[in-house]
Length: 302
Image 1 (cartoon, rainbow, N blue to C red):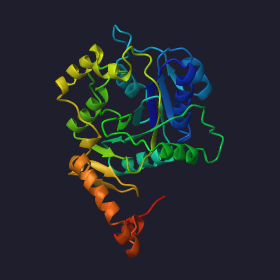
Image 2: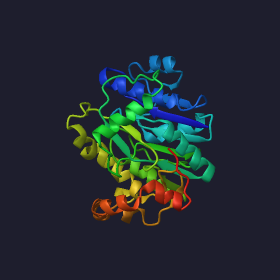
Image 3: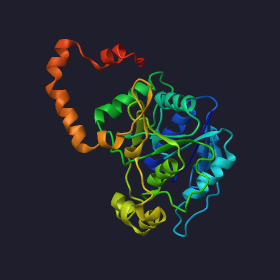
């Protein structure tokens, strides 16, 4: 099955709301899902006891107090009771489509990295997970906001234990570590699967008051520059643009040799223009996406 691992901010105010939402959503994916939460921030022990998470209070830190990604990955791969792991930022709500994507990738190939774009969504209240249709409500909230984030943002990483045998002393909470993880998977020969068409990963919007310069500071301060230097001065940086495969909306994993080209802004603009201009013709001919997929023998899943 699957072991999640992550680290969190103090469970105070809005951070407490969105972090609890994320952690609870992971636990509900399957009865055998394991969640390891690293760190001793305020409220962490209590949340771990309440949600039945494994609590690892100790984390090795940079002199600034920021946590080392290398320690998290090293310890998680040692402690996890499952062969497959997922590191996710602690503000990401994941749902049944994510777990279905994980199972498809696992059945398809042993060595892979599963990633996806995120939907930036304003979530201000605890999610009522007791509601039978809670996923539908969260999806609709994300769709209403219509904020599918750029391919450079990577917030979860699903992989087989051992893929990240070595990780440089990057720190979380600053930029560039996520792009290094994608590069490492590619350098190790793993298939990098972009599940964006299949998975709706909900990023719960939050502020950056913890940094004096806000979001910009997390990209440009000395710790961010240190992360970039450790990532080969930027050479060891890849994103979802560089995925080798795509998990399509109907559940098929396909090789994507032109993934970066097809997702470029100019190509996307042309594609959108063609879709708009051909709408009248496609309607007249009954050429809907589902109809074409069935005609080509693809299994249509909802």
